[in-house]
Image (cartoon, rainbow, N blue to C red; front, top):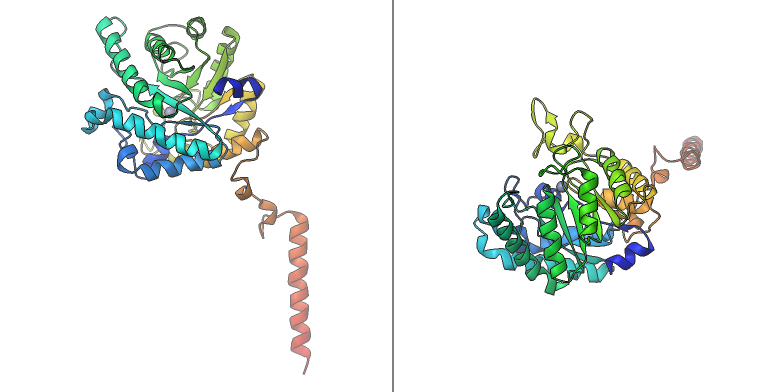
Length: 346
Ligand SMILES: [Zn+2]
Protein backbone atom coordinates (compact mmCIF):
# COMPACT_ATOMS: atom_id res chain seq x y z
CA UNK A 1 0.00 0.00 0.00
CA UNK A 2 2.79 2.45 0.88
CA UNK A 3 4.45 1.81 -2.47
CA UNK A 4 1.21 2.50 -4.34
CA UNK A 5 0.77 5.80 -2.52
CA UNK A 6 4.40 6.77 -3.17
CA UNK A 7 3.98 5.96 -6.85
CA UNK A 8 1.05 8.40 -7.04
CA UNK A 9 2.20 11.36 -4.98
CA UNK A 10 4.34 12.44 -2.05
CA UNK A 11 3.33 10.80 1.22
CA UNK A 12 3.06 12.82 4.43
CA UNK A 13 4.42 11.22 7.59
CA UNK A 14 3.48 11.85 11.20
CA UNK A 15 5.37 13.93 13.78
CA UNK A 16 7.53 13.39 16.84
CA UNK A 17 5.53 11.12 19.14
CA UNK A 18 8.28 10.72 21.76
CA UNK A 19 8.85 14.42 22.39
CA UNK A 20 5.19 15.37 22.16
CA UNK A 21 4.17 12.69 24.67
CA UNK A 22 7.06 13.72 26.92
CA UNK A 23 5.78 17.30 26.85
CA UNK A 24 2.28 16.03 27.70
CA UNK A 25 3.61 14.01 30.65
CA UNK A 26 3.53 10.44 29.36
CA UNK A 27 7.17 9.74 28.52
CA UNK A 28 10.10 10.19 30.87
CA UNK A 29 12.97 12.20 29.37
CA UNK A 30 16.10 10.12 29.79
CA UNK A 31 14.97 6.52 29.35
CA UNK A 32 12.45 7.69 26.68
CA UNK A 33 10.78 4.28 26.80
CA UNK A 34 7.24 3.78 25.42
CA UNK A 35 5.58 2.46 28.59
CA UNK A 36 2.67 4.84 27.86
CA UNK A 37 1.52 2.27 25.30
CA UNK A 38 0.32 -0.10 28.01
CA UNK A 39 -0.11 2.34 30.91
CA UNK A 40 -2.01 5.17 29.15
CA UNK A 41 -3.02 3.91 25.72
CA UNK A 42 -5.67 6.65 25.54
CA UNK A 43 -2.93 9.33 25.58
CA UNK A 44 -1.12 7.70 22.67
CA UNK A 45 -4.34 7.15 20.78
CA UNK A 46 -5.29 10.83 21.10
CA UNK A 47 -1.94 12.01 19.73
CA UNK A 48 -2.23 9.64 16.78
CA UNK A 49 -5.73 10.95 16.11
CA UNK A 50 -4.26 14.47 16.27
CA UNK A 51 -1.59 13.60 13.70
CA UNK A 52 -4.11 11.88 11.43
CA UNK A 53 -6.47 14.86 11.65
CA UNK A 54 -3.49 17.12 10.84
CA UNK A 55 -3.01 15.31 7.55
CA UNK A 56 -0.49 12.56 8.30
CA UNK A 57 -0.99 9.64 5.93
CA UNK A 58 1.29 7.25 7.76
CA UNK A 59 0.99 6.51 11.46
CA UNK A 60 3.95 4.77 13.01
CA UNK A 61 3.40 2.22 15.74
CA UNK A 62 4.91 3.88 18.78
CA UNK A 63 7.50 1.21 19.35
CA UNK A 64 10.60 3.37 19.35
CA UNK A 65 12.80 1.82 22.07
CA UNK A 66 10.26 -1.01 22.53
CA UNK A 67 13.07 -3.52 22.45
CA UNK A 68 14.44 -5.49 25.36
CA UNK A 69 17.66 -3.51 25.68
CA UNK A 70 15.84 -0.25 26.41
CA UNK A 71 12.70 -1.56 28.12
CA UNK A 72 14.75 -3.23 30.83
CA UNK A 73 15.97 0.27 31.82
CA UNK A 74 12.36 0.97 32.84
CA UNK A 75 11.90 -2.49 34.43
CA UNK A 76 9.63 -3.37 31.51
CA UNK A 77 11.84 -6.01 29.88
CA UNK A 78 8.96 -8.50 30.10
CA UNK A 79 6.57 -6.22 28.21
CA UNK A 80 8.24 -6.33 24.80
CA UNK A 81 5.53 -8.40 23.15
CA UNK A 82 2.65 -6.46 24.76
CA UNK A 83 4.02 -3.02 23.94
CA UNK A 84 4.79 -3.91 20.32
CA UNK A 85 1.38 -5.51 19.79
CA UNK A 86 -0.72 -2.86 21.53
CA UNK A 87 1.13 0.05 19.90
CA UNK A 88 0.45 -1.41 16.47
CA UNK A 89 -3.20 -2.08 17.31
CA UNK A 90 -3.69 1.54 18.43
CA UNK A 91 -2.08 2.88 15.26
CA UNK A 92 -4.22 0.53 13.17
CA UNK A 93 -7.49 1.58 14.85
CA UNK A 94 -6.77 5.24 14.19
CA UNK A 95 -5.43 4.54 10.69
CA UNK A 96 -8.62 2.73 9.72
CA UNK A 97 -10.68 5.67 10.91
CA UNK A 98 -8.69 8.22 8.87
CA UNK A 99 -7.58 6.25 5.81
CA UNK A 100 -3.94 6.18 6.94
CA UNK A 101 -1.30 3.48 6.59
CA UNK A 102 0.38 1.86 9.59
CA UNK A 103 4.15 1.67 9.65
CA UNK A 104 5.72 -0.78 12.04
CA UNK A 105 8.77 0.69 13.70
CA UNK A 106 12.16 -0.56 14.81
CA UNK A 107 15.18 1.54 15.72
CA UNK A 108 18.76 1.61 16.94
CA UNK A 109 19.21 -1.12 19.57
CA UNK A 110 22.32 0.14 21.40
CA UNK A 111 23.43 -3.51 21.19
CA UNK A 112 25.14 -3.42 17.77
CA UNK A 113 28.96 -3.26 17.74
CA UNK A 114 30.60 -3.20 14.28
CA UNK A 115 33.32 -5.78 14.93
CA UNK A 116 31.34 -8.13 17.15
CA UNK A 117 29.32 -10.85 15.32
CA UNK A 118 27.61 -11.89 18.56
CA UNK A 119 26.14 -8.40 18.84
CA UNK A 120 24.91 -8.66 15.24
CA UNK A 121 22.98 -11.83 16.10
CA UNK A 122 21.53 -10.18 19.18
CA UNK A 123 20.55 -7.09 17.16
CA UNK A 124 18.78 -9.30 14.63
CA UNK A 125 17.01 -11.23 17.41
CA UNK A 126 15.69 -7.99 18.94
CA UNK A 127 14.48 -6.73 15.54
CA UNK A 128 12.81 -10.08 14.79
CA UNK A 129 10.99 -10.05 18.14
CA UNK A 130 9.61 -6.56 17.55
CA UNK A 131 8.58 -7.29 13.96
CA UNK A 132 6.94 -10.57 14.97
CA UNK A 133 4.72 -8.75 17.48
CA UNK A 134 3.86 -5.83 15.17
CA UNK A 135 3.27 -7.48 11.81
CA UNK A 136 0.07 -9.41 12.68
CA UNK A 137 -1.61 -6.24 13.98
CA UNK A 138 -1.73 -4.27 10.76
CA UNK A 139 1.75 -2.99 9.90
CA UNK A 140 1.78 -2.36 6.14
CA UNK A 141 5.51 -1.69 6.00
CA UNK A 142 8.31 -1.05 8.48
CA UNK A 143 10.34 2.03 9.24
CA UNK A 144 13.74 1.24 10.72
CA UNK A 145 15.00 4.56 12.01
CA UNK A 146 17.73 6.51 13.76
CA UNK A 147 20.28 3.92 12.67
CA UNK A 148 23.75 5.32 13.07
CA UNK A 149 25.59 2.24 11.82
CA UNK A 150 25.12 1.10 8.24
CA UNK A 151 25.77 -2.45 9.47
CA UNK A 152 22.83 -2.21 11.87
CA UNK A 153 20.69 -0.69 9.10
CA UNK A 154 21.50 -3.66 6.84
CA UNK A 155 20.47 -6.10 9.58
CA UNK A 156 17.19 -4.18 10.02
CA UNK A 157 16.55 -4.28 6.28
CA UNK A 158 17.08 -8.06 6.12
CA UNK A 159 14.84 -8.62 9.14
CA UNK A 160 12.01 -6.58 7.55
CA UNK A 161 12.34 -8.25 4.16
CA UNK A 162 12.52 -11.72 5.70
CA UNK A 163 9.16 -10.92 7.31
CA UNK A 164 7.82 -10.10 3.84
CA UNK A 165 7.23 -6.36 4.30
CA UNK A 166 8.55 -3.32 2.43
CA UNK A 167 11.26 -1.37 4.25
CA UNK A 168 11.97 2.28 4.83
CA UNK A 169 15.45 2.65 6.28
CA UNK A 170 16.44 6.02 7.68
CA UNK A 171 19.89 6.69 9.00
CA UNK A 172 20.48 8.98 11.95
CA UNK A 173 23.66 10.79 11.04
CA UNK A 174 25.40 11.94 14.21
CA UNK A 175 28.85 12.20 12.63
CA UNK A 176 28.72 14.67 9.76
CA UNK A 177 28.03 12.92 6.48
CA UNK A 178 29.34 9.50 7.50
CA UNK A 179 27.74 6.65 9.42
CA UNK A 180 29.10 5.62 12.80
CA UNK A 181 30.87 2.72 11.05
CA UNK A 182 32.52 5.30 8.80
CA UNK A 183 30.70 4.76 5.53
CA UNK A 184 30.15 7.83 3.34
CA UNK A 185 26.60 8.99 2.73
CA UNK A 186 26.50 8.14 -0.98
CA UNK A 187 27.96 4.69 -0.48
CA UNK A 188 25.52 3.98 2.37
CA UNK A 189 22.61 5.03 0.12
CA UNK A 190 23.84 2.83 -2.70
CA UNK A 191 24.39 -0.19 -0.47
CA UNK A 192 20.90 0.07 1.04
CA UNK A 193 19.35 0.42 -2.39
CA UNK A 194 21.37 -2.51 -3.77
CA UNK A 195 20.21 -4.59 -0.79
CA UNK A 196 16.65 -3.91 -1.91
CA UNK A 197 15.43 -1.12 0.38
CA UNK A 198 12.26 0.36 -1.09
CA UNK A 199 12.69 3.71 0.71
CA UNK A 200 15.86 5.20 2.19
CA UNK A 201 16.59 8.48 3.90
CA UNK A 202 17.48 10.28 7.08
CA UNK A 203 15.67 10.97 10.33
CA UNK A 204 16.23 12.88 13.55
CA UNK A 205 19.33 14.84 14.64
CA UNK A 206 19.01 17.65 12.07
CA UNK A 207 16.51 20.35 11.20
CA UNK A 208 15.29 20.62 7.61
CA UNK A 209 17.93 23.08 6.45
CA UNK A 210 20.73 20.84 7.73
CA UNK A 211 19.14 17.64 6.46
CA UNK A 212 17.93 18.51 2.96
CA UNK A 213 21.39 19.04 1.44
CA UNK A 214 22.41 15.55 2.60
CA UNK A 215 19.19 14.08 1.22
CA UNK A 216 19.92 15.76 -2.10
CA UNK A 217 23.15 13.76 -2.21
CA UNK A 218 21.29 10.53 -1.39
CA UNK A 219 18.80 11.38 -4.15
CA UNK A 220 21.73 11.61 -6.59
CA UNK A 221 23.32 8.39 -5.40
CA UNK A 222 20.23 6.15 -5.41
CA UNK A 223 17.08 5.83 -7.47
CA UNK A 224 14.70 4.32 -4.88
CA UNK A 225 12.26 6.51 -2.91
CA UNK A 226 13.84 9.05 -0.55
CA UNK A 227 12.41 9.88 2.89
CA UNK A 228 12.94 12.98 5.03
CA UNK A 229 12.14 13.01 8.73
CA UNK A 230 13.92 16.07 10.19
CA UNK A 231 13.44 17.46 13.68
CA UNK A 232 11.39 20.62 14.24
CA UNK A 233 14.07 22.19 16.44
CA UNK A 234 16.32 24.89 15.03
CA UNK A 235 19.95 23.94 14.41
CA UNK A 236 22.90 26.07 13.30
CA UNK A 237 25.84 25.54 10.99
CA UNK A 238 28.12 25.38 14.05
CA UNK A 239 25.73 22.96 15.77
CA UNK A 240 23.83 21.05 13.09
CA UNK A 241 22.36 18.57 15.64
CA UNK A 242 19.46 19.52 17.87
CA UNK A 243 21.01 17.53 20.72
CA UNK A 244 23.98 19.92 20.65
CA UNK A 245 22.07 23.17 21.19
CA UNK A 246 22.97 25.25 24.24
CA UNK A 247 20.57 27.23 26.41
CA UNK A 248 21.75 29.49 29.23
CA UNK A 249 25.22 27.93 29.38
CA UNK A 250 23.89 24.39 29.57
CA UNK A 251 22.69 21.75 27.16
CA UNK A 252 19.23 22.48 25.80
CA UNK A 253 18.63 18.77 25.14
CA UNK A 254 16.30 17.40 26.21
CA UNK A 255 14.54 19.70 28.69
CA UNK A 256 15.12 23.26 27.43
CA UNK A 257 14.46 22.91 23.75
CA UNK A 258 11.39 25.17 23.83
CA UNK A 259 13.20 28.25 22.42
CA UNK A 260 14.36 26.15 19.47
CA UNK A 261 10.97 25.08 18.11
CA UNK A 262 10.62 25.80 14.41
CA UNK A 263 7.47 27.60 13.40
CA UNK A 264 4.77 25.90 11.38
CA UNK A 265 5.63 28.19 8.45
CA UNK A 266 9.21 26.93 8.48
CA UNK A 267 8.02 23.32 8.45
CA UNK A 268 5.59 24.11 5.63
CA UNK A 269 8.44 25.65 3.67
CA UNK A 270 10.51 22.51 4.30
CA UNK A 271 7.72 20.31 2.91
CA UNK A 272 7.65 22.32 -0.31
CA UNK A 273 11.42 22.29 -0.70
CA UNK A 274 11.50 18.53 -0.08
CA UNK A 275 8.89 17.90 -2.77
CA UNK A 276 10.81 20.09 -5.22
CA UNK A 277 13.92 17.98 -4.60
CA UNK A 278 12.08 14.78 -5.48
CA UNK A 279 11.74 13.52 -1.91
CA UNK A 280 8.65 11.31 -1.78
CA UNK A 281 8.16 10.58 1.92
CA UNK A 282 7.86 13.91 3.72
CA UNK A 283 7.66 13.42 7.46
CA UNK A 284 9.14 14.84 10.62
CA UNK A 285 10.74 13.72 13.86
CA UNK A 286 11.42 15.10 17.35
CA UNK A 287 9.66 18.39 18.14
CA UNK A 288 7.18 18.14 15.30
CA UNK A 289 3.63 18.49 16.63
CA UNK A 290 0.22 18.34 14.93
CA UNK A 291 0.25 22.05 13.99
CA UNK A 292 3.51 21.51 12.07
CA UNK A 293 2.10 18.49 10.22
CA UNK A 294 -1.09 20.34 9.27
CA UNK A 295 0.92 23.29 7.92
CA UNK A 296 3.07 20.87 5.90
CA UNK A 297 0.06 19.04 4.52
CA UNK A 298 -1.74 22.24 3.55
CA UNK A 299 1.41 23.66 1.94
CA UNK A 300 1.46 20.51 -0.19
CA UNK A 301 -2.09 21.26 -1.29
CA UNK A 302 -3.95 18.85 0.94
CA UNK A 303 -7.14 19.51 2.83
CA UNK A 304 -6.93 17.78 6.20
CA UNK A 305 -9.70 16.70 8.59
CA UNK A 306 -8.71 19.67 10.77
CA UNK A 307 -8.40 22.24 7.99
CA UNK A 308 -11.68 23.61 9.29
CA UNK A 309 -9.66 24.93 12.25
CA UNK A 310 -6.78 26.30 10.22
CA UNK A 311 -5.83 29.95 10.77
CA UNK A 312 -8.19 32.66 9.48
CA UNK A 313 -6.27 35.73 10.51
CA UNK A 314 -8.36 37.83 8.13
CA UNK A 315 -11.15 37.39 10.67
CA UNK A 316 -9.07 38.60 13.62
CA UNK A 317 -10.42 41.89 14.99
CA UNK A 318 -7.03 43.64 14.95
CA UNK A 319 -4.88 41.64 12.56
CA UNK A 320 -7.72 41.11 10.10
CA UNK A 321 -7.48 42.27 6.52
CA UNK A 322 -8.30 45.80 5.44
CA UNK A 323 -11.87 45.15 4.36
CA UNK A 324 -12.75 43.44 7.62
CA UNK A 325 -11.07 46.22 9.58
CA UNK A 326 -12.89 48.92 7.62
CA UNK A 327 -16.15 47.14 8.16
CA UNK A 328 -15.49 46.93 11.87
CA UNK A 329 -14.43 50.62 12.13
CA UNK A 330 -17.56 51.69 10.26
CA UNK A 331 -19.70 49.63 12.63
CA UNK A 332 -18.07 51.29 15.65
CA UNK A 333 -18.61 54.72 14.09
CA UNK A 334 -22.24 53.91 13.34
CA UNK A 335 -22.75 52.73 16.90
CA UNK A 336 -21.16 55.88 18.30
CA UNK A 337 -23.34 58.05 16.07
CA UNK A 338 -26.34 56.07 17.20
CA UNK A 339 -25.34 56.68 20.78
CA UNK A 340 -24.92 60.41 20.02
CA UNK A 341 -28.40 60.60 18.60
CA UNK A 342 -29.84 58.68 21.52
CA UNK A 343 -28.03 61.01 23.90
CA UNK A 344 -29.43 64.14 22.26
CA UNK A 345 -32.94 62.89 22.04
CA UNK A 346 -35.23 63.97 24.85
ZN1 LIG B 1 13.91 12.38 16.42
